[in-house]
Length: 273
Image 1 (tube, rainbow, N blue to C red):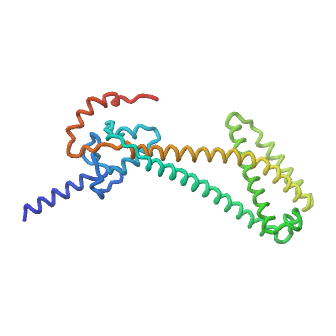
Image 2 (spheres, helix red, strand yellow):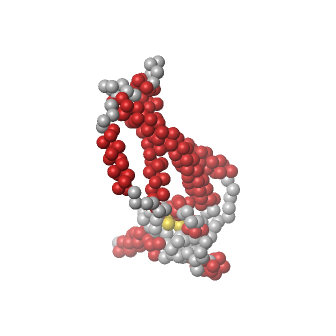
């Protein structure tokens, strides 16, 4: 009976030792490998977790070496798989279209919220509705107005960003004069009639909307480039991590010394890129 208990204790100890150092779990023991010189709790890692870690590494160093012991991974023979490359390309297109669709839906949601707010605010006076021809649909009128207002908000954000950048590069101290002039303009605006004030507001919104068109184009190009670069790098590294399979030295850790002496002498001292 004591022998059985000792064997059970040894088995539990072995399972506890074989805990993935990334996800801190010991499930899927067949997927756990020992690819480097790390010992103790850091010696074992799930192959999938390691591939995910290698593909998420932006600097590229963790792709080929352990970031703890700096041992360069030994790669198994490379097998080209055209089917896997084709799936990777499909996944890349899917993720890119997914992100662009989510951004488009988010923009549509913002425009629809502005549409509803404009319709509620214009319910009594119909000032916005009277700016458009009578043959236009009510929803189209307020949707187009919401879109123009969205562009105006983009223009305001763009001007704020521009002013903030100019201020950081060496702006002046004209805040008091600007505040006093704005207060005087606010006092004078109270003397204008409601119709003239609405026309001024519409003109200001249109001016900011024109600015917002350029801001939207610039932001759209930047976001698109960032998405393309993100998915390209991420999927490429993930594909490379699955293609260049790290060798498992579990139970054969004495073989690591051979690779240490031949491949990893230059890795001991970090270099500056």
